[in-house]
Image (cartoon, rainbow, N blue to C red; front, side, top):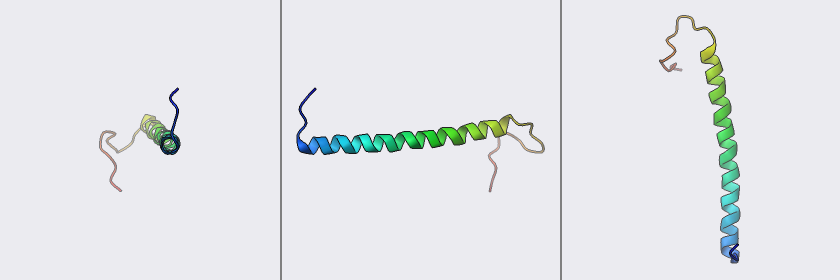
Length: 55
């Protein structure tokens, strides 16, 4: 592995941190998507499943 200078080490650390943040965001998105799918799997009454619900 290449030797890191101090600056690139910091950049690498920042990249690692942002990567972990991104992965937690992905988990959140996945959870909400799963919830939406579960909601759509439930029998629908008086609502078209393809139309997004307007708040």
